[in-house]
Length: 158
Length: 209
Image (cartoon, rainbow over all chains, first blue to last red; front, side, top):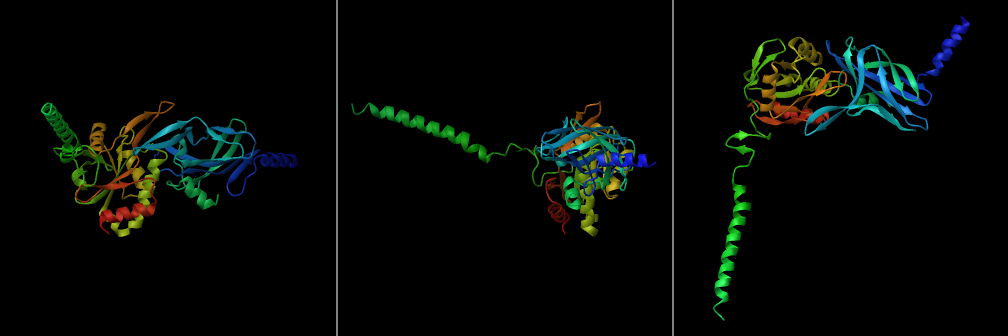
């Protein structure tokens, strides 16, 4: 029993929660990953997060896995002549010693084919897949439907 | 000797006047002609006061037929989006809900309308719970694709289907919210980049507060 506990503690220490709602694995830190609450019947959701890379090599977030949706893809909304359209992003590049704020400049993770509405107060488990840092399990918090990355950063003091 | 240059000078002078006349015709006269976007009443571009109440036949969120007449005589704010839109549309609708709250009782002087540009997926059953989630006062409109295409075009906007990886699709759609006054004339836009205060001030002006 004690060994199991030790193993569990050791496993937990690999993915240490950072200050507030966040996760740390190796040199990668995930700050406040959140999804927007969705209206009843909505088939599409959006996710946002801040990724910090304290390492000396750049890394790439190549995917997000979650049972909440059939598929998660990255996009940037580009607006030209008042026409908004989404441009796919293959991966999210996090520079060495830098950070990437998914949600700024029209960027977002799009959850396609929601399996259920995303409700306020829920914690939605997911796995972030990095090219170098590997897989990081985490939970998305849920923010109100119109919340932007700017709103979230202000509210959480990041 | 003294007489020969005179006809030549006359010819040059005459030619110069011809050049002046041609230049005047080309450069000055068009300024007094109607502008190309307002030819014989057929307006082809958006500007202040342009009519935004062209007839349409759509379906409201309760499944009832609706025409432009339902929105006549009251200021209105029009957003063209789709419910499979992850980022821009929920942001715009959540902001519209906040603005309606901030307008308080004056919100009754405004029709806030969400027109889907994806009627294939946004049926009455889909659009009603979607817009009502943000604010029940927001009116959702859907209908036949040709009807929506004609209506959006008549309001100087456009949309287009964009395929996504995996067989799904997204819609390209107007980013701004179009404001129309109680007389049915274009009265500016709510730009997504503007702060909420600016948007609220524009809506207050629109409804005459």
